[in-house]
Length: 252
Image 1 (tube, one colour):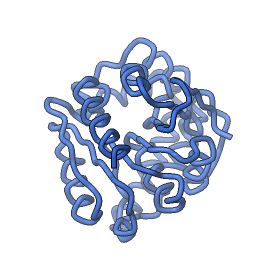
Image 2 (cartoon, helix red, strand yellow):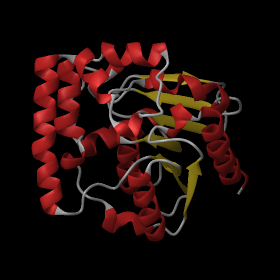
Image 3 (cartoon, helix red, strand yellow):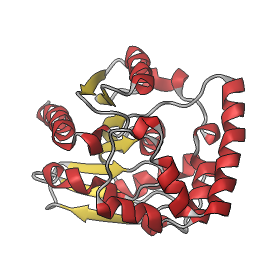
Image 4 (cartoon, helix red, strand yellow):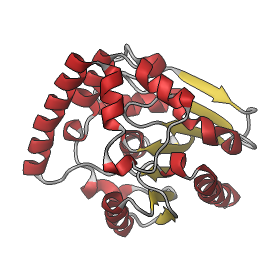
């Protein structure tokens, strides 16, 4: 069972939030109040992270575990969390009433690229184990894709508190190389889907456009001035886009 926190009063509308790599459920602090205004919001810690730091599950089993703690709801996943929510939506469409993917992909469909990513992920996991979490997190946040990101003190502290063995296990078990590519199954999705990308995130913007072409119920929202972590870089604009989508879903 994954660790979770619930905010907001029980209501017909439930929302499950799933964070990205190195993060915890604390990373949603800047947007959760707006999302919980008229919804029950469930925040989940992924295996190797936060309150689930001792959990070890495969990619598919993690998707199932998210569904167990979230139940029937709209699901919002960022990056790693988005890949897992997509897996859940395909495996248990009865649980996923609506799907919001933020800077996420269906995986690598090129075998050579996936194999290369697997080798790189093993190097990354070893680096985390030998150098420790704090050094790794600071190096991770220096990537160009996070140039506009300034984590809150609580978010940063929670990232640093993740044990290195948990993060290393997450890389090996939940990394993109460990994920079965899901591109050829996107047409199976029938629930409303919102693909959110930062305006400056060219890589995942192209991924979102390709996904939207394959998902009959999908639309794309680009957050002005944001990079990969659009919900953290432009929380007000991101929350407005997501709540508008969710309100339309519940109204219909």
